[in-house]
Structures are given as structure tokens and as C-alpha cells.
Length: 153
Image (cartoon, rainbow, N blue to C red; front, side, top):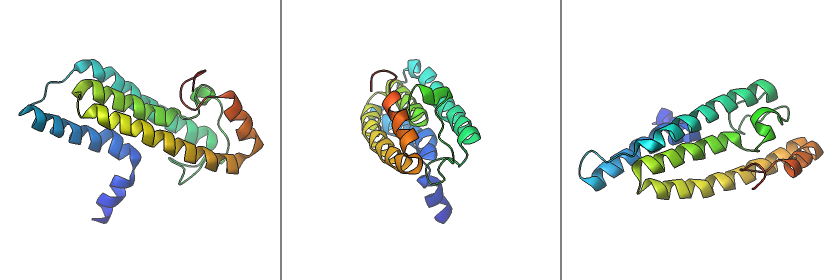
């Protein structure tokens, strides 16, 4: 039971493995068989996962630490994807969820909306932690770079 609990604690395991399986099963149950799938969402699945994977390696290589803020970066990273958005890894998760919503329709749209709120709350908490770690340089960075969408929000 402990390995399963540890596996489930990983946001990436839940986003990229558990939620797709659960949503596919839910959609199959709602449709009464193999669900109708809109394959136009597939590129967003690939983009979201690739962004999460690449940005994670980028941040670790330049900032140290490890995945997630349980092992925070040792250096502030403001280059690469971080010069456009403060949360490119979380954005990868959300792009993936958008792909699921397009592919599976209801109830995946509800899961996407809930995760938009959840990741926004999580990002705000992470940013408060990073502000304590890096002080003034981080404040300058947040004044320059938007949380989610470059130049907008």
C-alpha cells in the first residue's frame, strides 16, 4: 500500500497516467462501450507532456534541486521557457488536460477546469515559497514575467 500511496503523491503520475485512464473509463461507461474519441486533442497531449518533461530537465540542470518544490531549486532560473512564463511545467500539465478534454469531452472538461483552479492555487503557493528563497531577484522576475500566459496573465 505504501508504494501505491507514494506513486499517487506524484502530480505527474496522476496527470499523465491516472487521469487519462480514469477519464477513458468514465467516458466508456457514459457511452456504454468504447468511447467516441476526438483525435484533435492528441497533439495537445504530446505538447503538454513534452513541455513538462523538457522544462523539468531544463530547470534541474540550471537551477539544481529536483522535481517539485519538495526539493527546491538552488538557483533562480529566468532563462529559456522561464523568460516567457513563471510556471511552464504546470502549463504543460494544463495543456495535457486540455488535450484530454478535447479528446474525451464530458467529464474531462470538468477535470480540466478543476485542475486550472488547482494549479493556479499551487503556483501561487510555490511562488510565495520562491519569494522567500530568492527575495528581491525573484520579485523583479515576477514583475517582468507573467504567471501563465506571456504578456497577459
